[in-house]
Amino acid sequence: MKKFQLLIICLSIHFFTFALLHAQDWLGYHTSTYAGIQGIHVNPALITGSNYKKFDISIVAAHANLSNDFLYFDAATITNPNIFSRSDFFDTYVRQNLNGATKNAMLNANIQGPAFLYQFTPYDAIGFSPRVRAFANIDRWDENFAKLVVEELNYPPNWNNQISRQFMSATAQAWVEYGITYGRIIYADEKHTIKGGITAKLLQGLGAGYLTFTDYSYNFYNDQVMGIYDTYASFGMSQNVQDQEFRFGFEGGPGFGMDIGFTYEFKPNSIYGKTGLIRPRKSSYGRETGIWAKDETRYKFKVGISFNDIGGLMYAKSTNSRDFYANVDSLPLSVFDNVNGPASLAQTLQAVFVQSNNHSNFFIDLPTHLHLFFDYRIDKGFAVHTSLMLPFNHGIFDHHKNHYIYQLAVTPRWESKWFGIYLPLSFNEYLLYNLGISFRLGPLVIGTGDILGTLMKREYASLDVHMGLRLIFPKKTKKVNRSKCPTYL
Image (tube, rainbow, N blue to C red):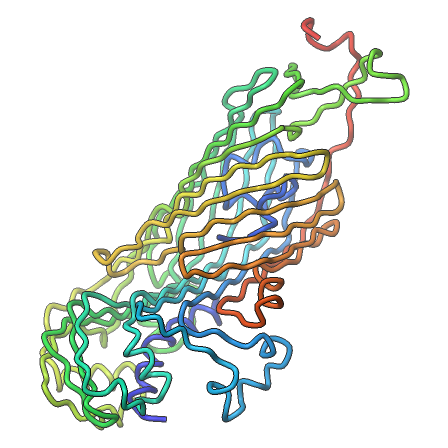
């Protein structure tokens, strides 16, 4: 493998590895009316009026997703990881998506520690939800360049081909967020309910890094010599990333973030009394005797909107971070032979290229996004949930940012007090469609956003898994005498 390929892989993937080892969420399960505190990150308004008693406690929850639009792997690699070590791995088990477009990738992983919600009135609830999160993006990498990296630069069809583009980048960070949420039923009558919620977050940066090229132009003459013309580039990292040493401290920040959301529910034939929503329930005594049950989630349909992950973190740059200008017609790749880490790389770049302004710190935006959903209940236990994720920080003007990808998902589900099954069908901007499955078995939740789609297509360009364990306290049916119900019954 050529030294230059090792360099590029190090620059573009090193941050991913750091984030993962020191590390749309919960696709499928987040649609559940039994998600409780584990669904708070989708829309903070969902914290109030849940299907649980005053307390809902999550012991641990985790989610990880890796997606790209360049390399498609054979499904056999899931059941037999030893395939990755085969000498013919790339030729036999990997399909390259060579469609002329730029290439992208996203990593999103998080672990939620002990979290809880407390419904302290029929209208009000608070919650606490700490999470360790890791996020990384590779954006707009030129296909010609990506192909050369995969082929170890030994791909003559892409030699002597000058490429000029506006932007490409790789950004990654890991952080802890400590979220405190307040949710309230803002308005309610016999048919309509409006809820609102807000989460304030204290952010603790654990480490970050970035690599960007702006207005770049390059030409690989062969696998030994290249030209790079009128190109502005920069790479930076926090000091612990450079030292490859994880420290659970404030490498970045402290910073502040926020989620804010609202939901609307339509409940036909429901009644709103002094203690909450009550609705007629059949019994052995018959409907006329008026046995009623308190139930705050028996809606016909529900819609929601939320703005999530508003904010960002400031990091101090390591001493070997660099911004530079490159204009070299003939650059022997052998100059990188002695590069074995960030310090030696900085020295090599400083010797070869012209160093420009180098600021002492850098700011990385959180993956801010707008989340919309529509949830329709077909019958008792059966429902269909449709969600749309619209990411911000997706352009080329903000170089240091994390972001989600555009995604539409439709999730049929069946659920009861102790069991649930969810089948998310999703489609995203990488032109990937996937079918997943999630199970809720009492206190345990396990699932994936794409395994069924992988089995049907026999290949995959994304992996998505999630799990959760909680203490659950479902509501019991509370009978209310008809004579105590509102006079309009």
